[in-house]
Structures are given as structure tokens and as C-alpha cells.
Amino acid sequence: MSNAQTAYSEDVQDMLKVIADLTGPPAGAYNIRVDGKSVGRQSSSNIEIKSKENGQGIEIYVRPGTKGEFVHIPVVVDQSGFSDIVYNDFYIGEGADVDIVAGCGIHNDGTHLSQHDGIHTFHVEKNAKVRYTEKHYGEGNGSGERVLNPVTVVHLEENSYLEMETVQIEGVDSTKRVTNGDLKDGARLVIKEKLMTSGKQRATTEFNVELNGVGCSANVMSRSVAKGESFQAFYSKIDGNNVCAGHSECDAIIMDNACVKAVPEITANHVDASLIHEAAIGKIAGEQITKLMTLGLSQSEAEKEIVKGFLK
Image (cartoon, rainbow, N blue to C red; front, side, top):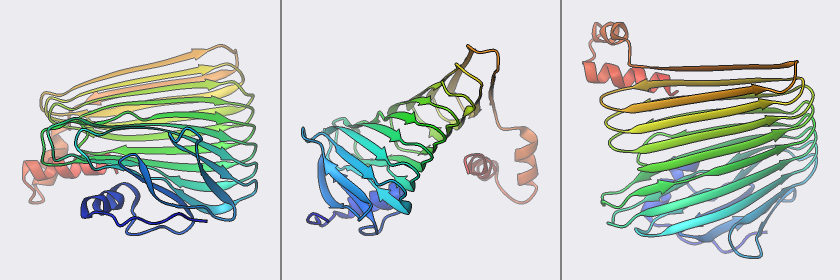
């Protein structure tokens, strides 16, 4: 079933292309939200999207055994001075295997702060698999700030799997990104973050994972580039409470007058918890730039190519 489709402005269309690779209504289930309202929605035979009773978000129900389907839930803020908060809950049935494409874009041509806070909670049942992609992007010619504060909560049942890829490459003035997860027996969580800040932008990332089940595992990886006078903080906390495996990795390139802070924390509460943390922060190696310059690139072009490859 579907609701009425609203014509999108050119700015909104451009945003949907960037954050969700959409050039029109997607196949399968979707909900498109613009300035706090759903402007297009469709459920499928296996995936139902419902509004919450209080109107502050949606509930997505994926039937057990569903395979190969996509859910698109992009959000766009297109008004200066508009603040939006949404609570989305995902119920992934046993044995399902689906892809969920989220993301938020803010277009702000005005002088007032525009903000979106999205709280997403995943309930992933036994043997289910989810690949979740979330892209954040900001643009606009105004002086108003663009602020994004995503929160993701993941509950993984036995032998379930969730892979989460988050990307924020440009245009967001301030962001606090929080991910909390708890895993049961045999569950696996993979988180891949790519982040770039410039100017006076600020970005804080917090990962908190509880490895509770026998044989469960988590792999948390962050790659970031800090330019200009921007600031980044990376906090990763993994608690191994059973026979489990956990790995946390932060790899950052620092440029200009930026600042990067990395605080990985691991706690083994079981003798057979195997936990590793790694953190590396540094500038681009001079020999990398020199090598590319010998191929005809300028220093600026060489740095751009290195950063592009690093965040690929």
C-alpha cells in the first residue's frame, strides 16, 4: 500500500540523490520524510511501514524469512530554522535478510540553525541479517548551522547479524553520533564509519557494545579526516561479558590546524573474552605526496587523491 506522493523541489531531489541514491520513488518499501512530514510511503507484501501513534516516527516490520528486499527511509530538512526529531523502530523477523538505506540531508540557505535528530532502534531476531547504510550531508549558502545527531540502538538475538555503514563527508557543522548495541549467542555486529570535517566543524562519535552471548563478536572501525580548524572525538567502549571477540579501530588523518581525540576502551569480564583496540592519528606521509607529484599532480591535488582513497 502507498500514500500520496508529493512533488519534490529541486533541492530535495538533489539531497535524495546524495543521501540515498534516489532519482525517484524506489521499488519496494519506503518512507520519505521532508521537513518533519512523510511525503511518500509504500509498504510491500513482506515489509510494513506504520506511523507511530504519537506521530513522531515510524515502525518497520519485516516478515520472518523475507529475502533480498530493500527499505528506503531518507530524511531531508529544507527549511532554515527547522528542528526535527524522529523515533524509528525496526522489527526484523527471524531468518530475514534485508537492506535498509537511511540518511539525512540538510539544505540551509538561511541564518537560523537547522537540525535533525534521528533515533533508530533495531530488534533483530534469530538468524536474521541486516545491512544498514546511513549517509549524512549538509549544504546551503546561508550562515545558519546544519546539525545532525543520530542515535542507533541495536538488539541482536541469537546468530543474527547487522552491518552498519555510516558516512558523513561534508557540510555538517555539528554532529554527535551515538551507537549502542547488545549481542546474544553467536550474534555479529560490524560497524564502519567514514567521516570528514573541515572549517570549524565538530563531530563526536560514541560506540558502546555489550558482548553478552557465547561466541558473539563486534568489529568497530572508524576512518576519518579532520581539516581546517575542525574537531573530532572518537569514543569506543566494548565490554566482553562472555566467550566472545571484540575489535575497535580508529584511523584518522589530521590536516591544517585540526584536532582529533581517540579514546578506545575495552573491558574483559570473562576469562575467554578476546578484545583488541587500535588507534592511529597522523598527517599524510610526505613520501605519499611526493610520489603523486612526480606523476604530475599538484600538492593540493595529491592530498585530495590520498584523502579520497583513505575514505573509499
